[in-house]
Image (tube, rainbow, N blue to C red; front, side):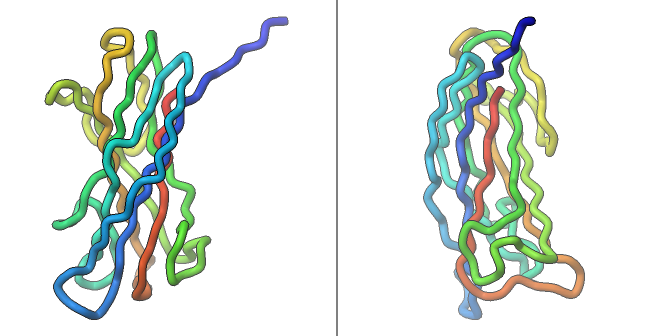
Amino acid sequence: MQSSIRSVALAVVLAGTTLSNSAPALAQSMPFTVTVGQSSSCTVVVNRNGTLVPNGAGTILSSKLAGGLSGEALVTPQNGIYTVSANHYDVWRNGPEPLNAPNTTFQPSHSGTYRGRNLYGERTTPIRLRAIRNRIAYLMDIDLVVTKDPGFSFAQGNYQTEVAVLCE
């Protein structure tokens, strides 16, 4: 009987924000927690932290809103075909609300570029790619949108959460 071993590279993107009554600054950049993984499939290195900013109603925190910032990871495939994704585990790492985030939806997305050209557009699901060439890196932009259910809003305070960048 043959067994199959699958290698996985994982990096964690840390995004955060601050909610307060004072204006105009409502965002705070948080550094990434960096994990560098080496596998037969890929290496993933986090290049830049992500920043979430709130909408005016305090019901959405997003890296896509004005003042927000996408996270960025450098993905280096070793060879062949591999799958990349950005996953969130629907919890706050730190924040004024319960860590299990009731009445809250987390939606990460990712896109890829190579030498300034679009490799693949924004998506919320994993994508299978073929290595451009062995050990040629490309950039993966990671966004996160966090929304409250209707009738709820985010409590004031500092929030941190993580998005896992997976390459296998």
